[in-house]
Figure 1 (cartoon, rainbow, N blue to C red):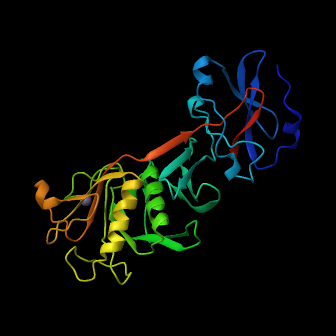
Figure 2 (tube, protein in one colour; figure 1 turned 90 degrees about the vertical axis):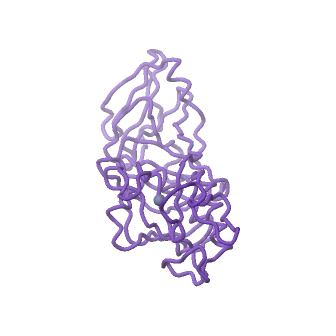
Figure 3 (cartoon, rainbow, N blue to C red; figure 1 turned 120 degrees about the vertical axis):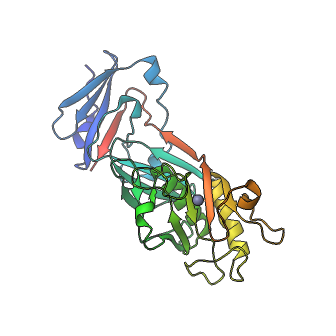
Length: 301
Ligand SMILES: [Zn+2]
């Protein structure tokens, strides 16, 4: 068996487990950092090898360096304190996800150089995150931004972890504080009546933005409808994954990236809300890279 690297002896307390490659026996070992106990092993196969690559995220987590934080999805190791880590690029719309098996999700914004923590959210038994109140954070320009949930609609505002990353990315890229979620899905991922399409926490309704910056209702033909900011919002939502949006046309004008409900033979009037659907984000699941001689950190408290 391969001797653990010397650095194993100085692992910080925060580290839960490490993965060690045993090259002689072509095995990977998951070892508890505190006492060296071998939790499980798996053979190194060609199939496994192809999952391994250099970790592009490690520089973003200086507190973890020089050990890479691991999301060893193909191995399905259980990390009781697991947190999926989403790193959302404000500029490109790309989201990098480091997967674990836990039910917490931590969100970071990045501009490609620096990274800033947004927040951590716990999913329910159906893998959805309940939204409520106001989610406030700073974007990479240091601007305060955030979104809120329409009061009374909390029970219909369950969002998927991925869609939450996209919403954070869109709002962060805009630097707005007045985006209002009207709803996504029910806690089990079904669509709240009367809509049928709000499934799996990926399809939702938002309020249009107002010129006065207040999180309150407005209509596409209302005099406080903020054309410039609503155009920026649909562009940002498109960039972060919602490839189809429904609004209404007013005097020939239609928001970019949307089509009019009335022209799609959709019976419900979308004058007072923007419907966002066909969620297809650019999410890259990342896996920890090793050279089979490295030590990888599996989990972190
Ligand atoms: Zn809708």
